[in-house]
Image (cartoon, rainbow, N blue to C red; front, side, top):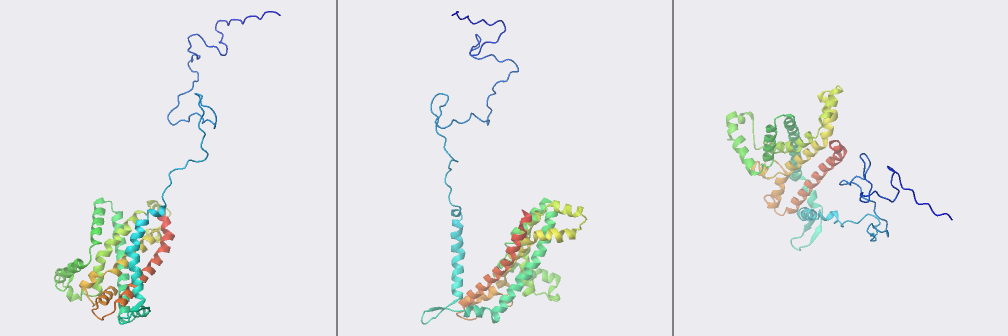
Length: 353
């Protein structure tokens, strides 16, 4: 056998063999300008791929097995627990009184024997004679004042929204917030001192010669408008702000007039808010008692005044259950009004999203 020839020494400028390093290089080949190197990891960049279960890491220690599936987070509480205080409050403040009212309206207790039996006599009497007249009068007064306040409130709110003066908007909304909560006996006294028989405005304008009478259906309508119109302004201003300017611009660009825009776009979009405001005003006027009691007494038939008379026994004694039946009639009327509002609100609320 011939002896193996020694490996030839590399010539000058030749690249070192694989596995060898140049002297003084520190174990790595020197980087030349322009050569591609491994860039350091920036924050948020992907790290090395996770080790498979059972594989060893770089330092030789076994890697922890990877948990299968998505890690479980802390268990959240049931959603209805957050509404539990509200449900308890509603049950105590609304459920119990409504149940007692319903029970008293359909039952009768014998004062001698002390027995209680179900009857429809109270509901029948609440829809006859003066009780029916008072119920009809309250519905007429509430519907009239709510309709007038809705129209006036929308006009005032539209003027405020389109105004470029922020101070005017702030002043109107602040005054509306105060006047909407100004009612009861103080409001009645203010109108008596202003528009009563000897009121300041009545004497200056000689309104008595024109047939003005504050203690009538017309006078009560004017008083109710005093706090219903500001309430409507507060309700409808956010809805008017929701009307997009692009809708009006598109209507004008297609040749539509202002009336056509409000008829086909503006009013249909605002219909839920307007009807909701009307329902709110109707309920406020329908349930008002202190102002009418201090101003007109029994001269104007209203259901709230009849309920107070029946509970206090001013006219007849032992009519408490009839008063409860009248209250149940009021709840039914309010429910019918809300039944008209809710379907329309669900139908057109998508336009204001």
